[in-house]
Length: 361
Image 1 (cartoon, helix red, strand yellow):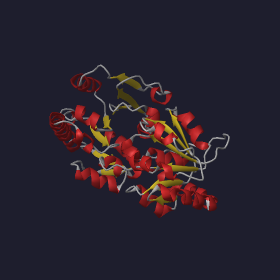
Image 2 (cartoon, rainbow, N blue to C red):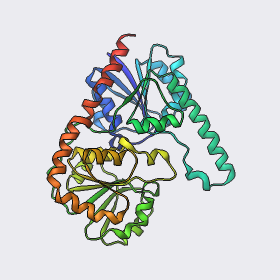
Image 3 (cartoon, helix red, strand yellow):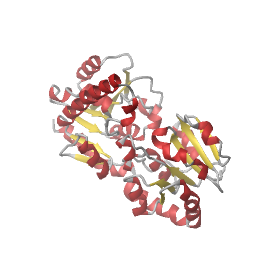
């Protein structure tokens, strides 16, 4: 049996990260024992089954984490974000019998959000970014291959110094089987997820345009909650749900609204097929309404998965358009998802390849 180390130092709970959960599941199916490095407690049974181990790195320094990985001496190491790469950057050059991969879930960019801080803070931020970026580049050069979600994000990643001659394109989707639950129906449109200004700045400014239908917004980090609630057509729920509860909650609605807009962060602006909630809604058969976000908007137009809008002034008409053609959208989503997005299907060649590569060692 092979052993794989999955680095998850970003600290995002597994319930919010379908890719990380499914990486573990797909490796388990191929008889690979998984050791997860995570800064905290992992309660999800999916991650703790089939002989998997979880190492809590919350109190560990980078040197101690590297030493622990070398002691385990795994066949495979998979890093998922900059937090992992900056720890593991030197390991591909000293662990010659281990295959390293960068399953790149976040493009590491220097966000412009820091430009309004004082001079010393900006200088420290630039130095920290440069140090981490250099380590990320070193790590990727030592990898066997990398994964990113689509051609757009591959191009943006290269612009920020990260590219590999062997790059797999795998969308941040769900495996089929995440079926719609039988729950009482709720009227209106659902928006879920992060509600900070990073992704909702223009939305918040246009919130008064929500008329003639009800919009439910459920998620976290909503600093403008009271401002949104001034509109009687908007219901705001600030909370985080387990994966099962999240699925049940979303299943009650007919249509989903997805909104990504950030002038300050190229990773958010170029969300493309890294949007987990986009695939969550599609896996439930829900048509989507999306602002004109690069990569995501083109996919929706090409495969007729919903409606793309430029501002909230167009949202009411988009809702009417979808309801007028609802069966068409639902059947089309089901057909396209099976053919193009089913994670188990689209990731199979990659996971087969990394196990085959380990066997050749």
